[in-house]
Image 1: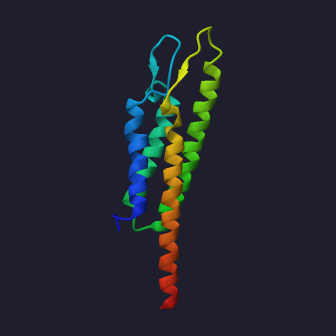
Image 2: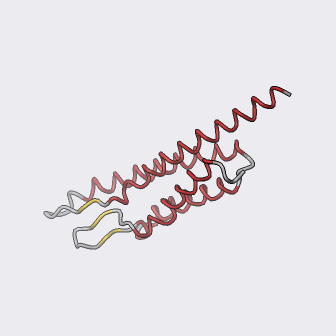
Image 3: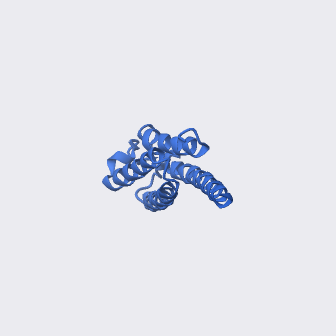
Length: 137
């Protein structure tokens, strides 16, 4: 069913990766301009894949095992994205005498990872429930 709790978690993940990243800058450059994920092609591709996996996972609510695997792949993808954000931010601080400011957008993949873990726990719980009912037949 689409009204399960993991669908709510996945929908919140979609909002974070697919909507909020457009409005919240990752960091502010030394020139005073905000840096959004769209200004780097690698970030755009990784966030697009993450958003696509989340949407596909929401749609495939009847196939819990596939939904679980897509959730794990999405977690790995967000960890890679977070690693790239941290690497880039550590390289930013030594550019000039003025230090660039890190934005809150850099930590949105952490929130997405937490929501994906909660969704995977709920999917696993549903799968265990279905297996226990099948065992009784």
